[in-house]
Length: 104
Image (spheres, rainbow, N blue to C red):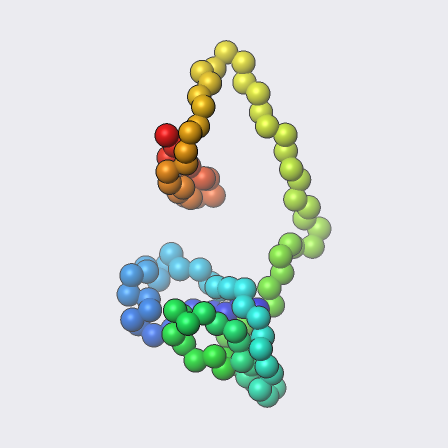
């Protein structure tokens, strides 16, 4: 299950800009169904919220959307370009759906 961080306390959200936060975080396992309206989740200690959550705050986690297939593409070979050997990956940054690496 994924949980909505919408009602998390202000102290948890101080470092994060509201418009840049994820709509749901997780996935977390359901430990126990308390009632029709509440479930107990297995949450990490660092999250520091109550384990019992209203069902309105959770959604079912789906690893893959129906009809979409993950296709593994072969590496691209470019001729006439410089070639580098990577010794170590120092950092990884994701922006606008693109991943950039800082390498040595």
